[in-house]
Image (tube, rainbow, N blue to C red; front, side, top):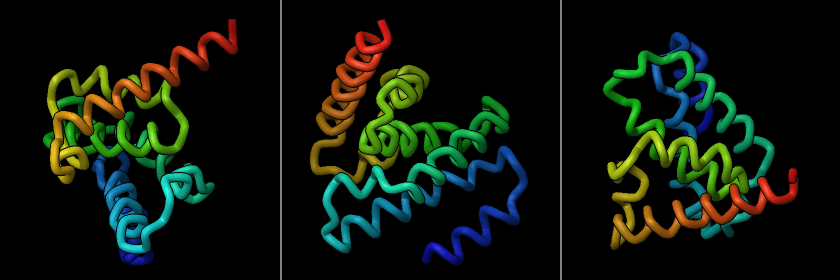
Length: 130
């Protein structure tokens, strides 16, 4: 699965918003393998996050997959312990609840819970810097 996705992402132009598919693949992999949430902190996931952020930055702001990209980034950045970056995505999403939150039994609650975690983490990071 990852090899196929990597090839597709490598062949796609910057701004295609194909890179977030890698985050969706990790979500499926970690769920199927029963891996702990700490799996989101692996270096290869961090590289996928950086690639997805770069892809989003290169995309047209009105790209039809922007919400999809932001949803996966918000989720994965929160799980990866990168709350300040995640918070940017939650802000851009506003009240829209995209994938992967729609995969949960209660999408709204999953979205709110992770958004709160991102806010708390971002505040903690800001206090450390102050």
